[in-house]
Length: 436
Image (cartoon, rainbow, N blue to C red; front, side, top):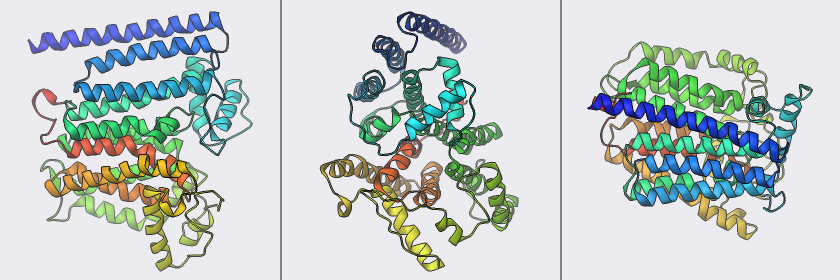
């Protein structure tokens, strides 16, 4: 009976993929008839929104979740679709909350790449956009839909991790992932955050699977999933560091952290620390930009440009000695997660962002901390704090005002929700029918 059920599910998935392909071709044909440029076509935009709604309704209906959680998922999806539709199809209908021109710059450079003009470089992101333009056509709106679907794929990972989404804890976690206002706005922009978030979520998902099952394939998939995120933004190298530390100190066969004896992996870890300057030099070659020149504290500080901003929480001061470096690192790490704080409120929007963005983050970390205290052997909760420490150190030194901090921290929302779901799970999903 199990084999028959599996066979039916496989057939349904094949039919579903075929239907998606058929609809995709149909929408492109209709859009080309209506307007050769779909990017700002009102009718073309409506067609894409209707198609996406159909796909989400089908997938959400099949998802194992309570009615309340499904309502939250649909609401989060609709909010994103409305934002994407107005931003692309009715320019100027929504106010711009992003003070920089990154989105315009990325689209402009990617459009040049699309026409074979490679005279500019601004990170690797335009190369990804060029690939998407060649697949979906020169359509900014379609790219927004693709990024929203990347967000939804992260939701599927969360659902698969939980087994079934139900109860107040899962409602809070899903609402955190779906309804936070700033991620909704950023997630519909043509920025690196959406593909980076999905890549990191996949990496963490496979890392936890390796911790549960001990299969080398899961560890390799975890590393492979992190590479695209590092390619898009070299700050994401922290994810690879988390994988390495977890590999060194976690014993998958025993299901706990190494605490008793030194093994070969600990020796590898010690050698990696000793070889850090050499490894750093390798990254300056592979990922030029932030990694420039030999490593030093003074060099790190000098490479961070001072920029004025309304909610700037780091001032142009000198702190090159080790003690001040440590103190200011702690200061920046705290403000990275809690800004905009009341000290820097200058308008009503800052107050709203504090209560709708900062406060939920504080609640999420308290939830994970409680899970650690309840189950000290839970690997996922410990990984959450290892991940938090490493990525916070890296990104805290790359940001210095509330707007930039929120943009960078919120693309980790899916990762921490995924880790929180893992931490709150009482049984391993690597036994019996749940083996993957």
